[in-house]
Length: 285
Length: 328
Image (cartoon, rainbow over all chains, first blue to last red):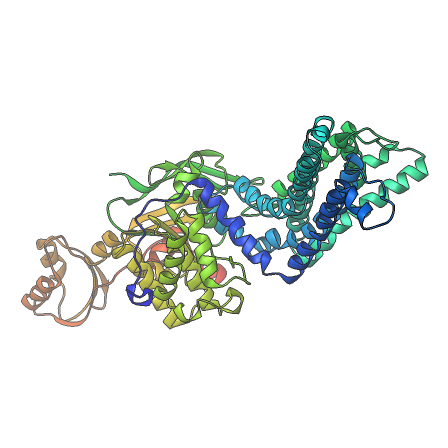
């Protein structure tokens, strides 16, 4: 029978699992994000650099090919430094994507008062945040650790056992380094979005978070003639952590562990902001 | 018989203020659709009670149970069984109605394909079928109210919590909304908790009523029983010599008060109908100028409960605050 002729009937069938309910949010959010032109453009642009890197990896393993087409073969090496450069570029794209997509996930829910509706369903605030993190985390993974691991796998396949043995930790380094960044950036985007509740301003705030902190760190380092202010500069702190993870020489300043702890501290602070702001009802004391 | 909502010594503190103070009551016997009206003046604690039932506020003391499940200890079990329509704007304005209802269905536990089907079905049912692919931001206030109602019933809840569902509706839409609420109760066996400041709406739909004032329960009534008891109260105005009327009424078991000028107020005992009263008046050779089977309207019950008037108006009704505020 056609739906419009049917009338209302109470659903009596079995209910889906809790995880399936939580996953309804990311599924719909991804559909909506893919409909946003700017997000799609940045997403596509962010895949050019990994594509270029695959070409680099291919050439690095096929130097004979370069010789045959003439010219002296440059020195190509696929090592920690190569992945560090790769991660730096992709981290920028990840931040841009988070600034574009993140605010649209939470700000509209808060601005439109949809949170009481969602939380009146069998979902907790933690489920809601996890679902939103999954949306961002999933999309950022697509431009960070997934292509990173593809590159590692490609290099492993082409270079063989002789490369894998000394460089096996690179895969773990790329994965852990990117996950750290994805987590931080996602939390920044959600917290900014929950804090200002306006999509455009929240997007600007996400970028501002990184630029302002970087600027502050630079000023502190210069004025106080210290190096520890790197700890409050998220991109720089992440760079130090990545250097440690990829076995590349760490620049002067705090070590990877201290930087990692600083980034973890920032994430906890952002999670606290989310805890304060994402409430179904506001109580004015 | 278990009850739909059970509150035991429930106290809720928001900031420094104890908004709900040791509320204890049992509302709506289970075993068939039943509607409970939640009434109270502004700041009485109605919204706080609803939010506590939804698990948004943690009780300071006591417990609140819905369909046997503790709202604070088993929120997921409770929320699986309820549909909530908030008073405030609550929807994503750039989402189509179908997408919104589908999402609400899915997060309530409907499988995706069922959720989509139900979204269409419910939107047609509430009268938004033709507008279901429009974004919610383009809806009028009345349509938004209907969309909010639709999302509350999309998953077929056992208890429907409606906060001011007829707010901002024109008379036709209001009638449709009340019809829908009655239908959910009578035909689909849902329990309804209706919070409204429009007493007429509550009177039309609800079987029970709970009146809150200053965070306490001041009146809990079975409206059907109230209506039955109201049928026993008669206002009378007779022409002729009524000196023997009090005695005659007493012989029939009725209590009566003579207000002078042929005006009487009579409480009929069980078994004595208005027809019987007519016959008695005929026996006494009294002409009837007026016979009014008065009933306490919900408004009167409400005003009495919150202390604005001490007794049913009419005759010597004392209007406590009328002089001071000029409200009644």
